Length: 263
Image (cartoon, rainbow, N blue to C red):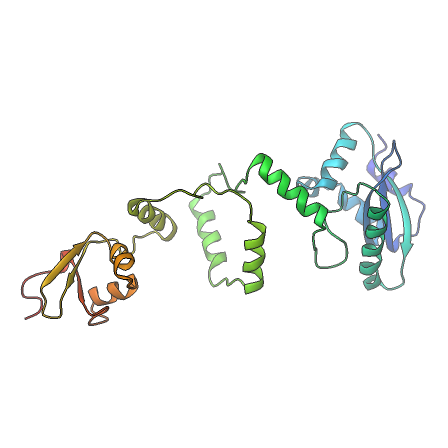
C-alpha cells in the first residue's frame, strides 16, 4: 500500500475550498462526497486512528479498504472562492450522486447542521432493531473521580423543547428493558437511590384527620399519592413542618409520631 503521505502528495488537484469524492479503487464507484478548506489536511484527517474509531458507514468502508492494502481514489469535482459556499455545493452533489444510484457512505445530507438523510435514519433504525440498543457505558467501570466529573458536567444542563422532541423521536420503536415491566415500589426506591444517592419520601407515613386522629398508615407517600390523587412532595412538606396540611389531612412520618404531637 502507498504510504499515506505519498498517497496525499500524489493528488494533483486544487486543494483550497473544494468539493471532493472518494471512489472505490476497484469498481470506481463514488462512495463519499466531502468538502475541504484544505484538501490535503482533510484527507489526512480521515485516516487519523482517533477518527477511524468512530463507528460510521464511511469509516467501516475505509477500514475494509485499508485491511486489503487499498485506499480510495480522490477527485475534486467542484470548488468555490468562498468556503461558506461549499455547504450548498456539498448538499447539491450528495443529492446528485444519490439520485443516480450511488451507494454513498455519507451519513448526512451535507452542509452545516448535520441533518441525517432518510436513508441513513432507516439504516440506523434497522441496526438498532437487529443488534439492540446498547448504552455507551455498558460494562465500563468508572473511577469515583470520573463519576464526580461527569456529575459536575451535567449540573445546570437544561434541554430545549426541540432537543427533548428529537430525543423522543429517535427512541420511538426501540424496545427498552423496562417496557411493559411493572416495577415494585421497592425497585423504584432502589432506582431512585442509585440515581440521587438518597431515598426520597420512602418512609411510612400516617394519614391523620385535622384533630390528629390516625386514619391510615401508608408504607410510602407514593402509595397515598396514587390512591388519593395527592402530591407526595406536599405530603413530605407536611411531615417536615413546611406545610400544615395537604388534601384536607395532616401527615406525619411514623418515626416522628407521638401522642403529644398535636397537644
